[in-house]
Length: 120
Image 1 (cartoon, one colour):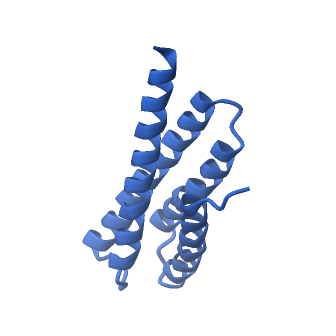
Image 2 (cartoon, helix red, strand yellow):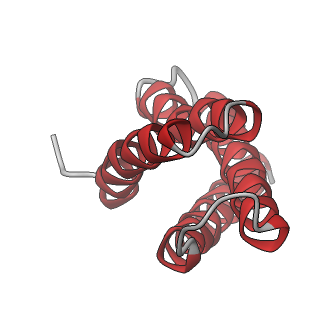
């Protein structure tokens, strides 16, 4: 099976989110860090489900869910950065998350367009 760039990127991102979660816990940030952990690790989980999809529509749906999770993760990262509740440089995480959002958006659009073309 061919390697999936988005699968690999989301897995590496999830590992970094787990490490960030531990740092945030050490700084006594318990609420937003939990939200970030859930959404940040959910991106890759949904991508894995998409890659095992039974149809193009199933694939597109799971990738769309991954895209939504990536956008939610981006929200939590930006909120943590702007609120200055903790001392940390979130910029590399925000950039990586924005890259995942772009990749996933492109995958969803391409899949939806190809599904529409096959229906015609």
